[in-house]
Image (cartoon, rainbow, N blue to C red; front, side):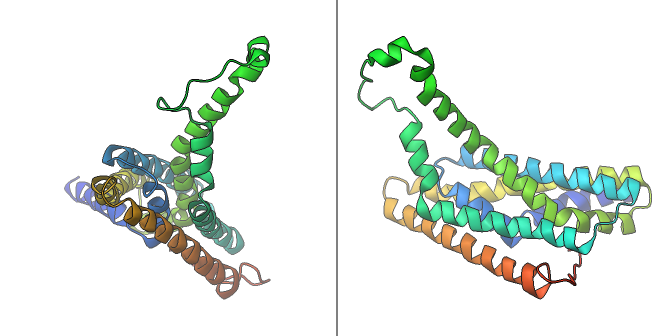
Length: 249
């Protein structure tokens, strides 16, 4: 039991280290640079970690209990989903599409009083349309890090499960390890997002230009790293060829 407790502690620490992988940090940075507040950033990190943990736990459990073998093309496709996600995040960050939608459809208390529209009065559905759009955008901003975490979990789930299988023979203890590993990832990502958001929060009023530059830089980095992964996965490892080569890692 003492040795297994040490293994679980190691799993928690490895989960925290796993949160610092370059693709994870780059993806979460593109979101955090648009936020203001350490608490909000920590929530984003927690949601990302929960999504990541969900995927690793589900896929890892299937591999451990049912000895599921992932074909090379499927494994590369899961990793390619991460590259596509990074490219999309980079483009959205650079174009400012999401910020525009948020400002366009999210009502503010400082804006002018809404005018009375006779058509809106006669049609409650028409009147409530902006509110529904606003609610959907808020939900999107809440669930975006969760979905990104789920996608990122696909890329590393097979490698984590195979590593656990070679170290822990009991399948139920191995599943428990996956859960502890995921908790460590959540904690690590919350810490990372807090560290990233701290300087942006303290300089929001004094260095707005610098903050905008950081947002642009994170978008460029996400786009560039996504394109690099696309080349590596699609051509070097052969996802776009007839003989793909995949090593879980």
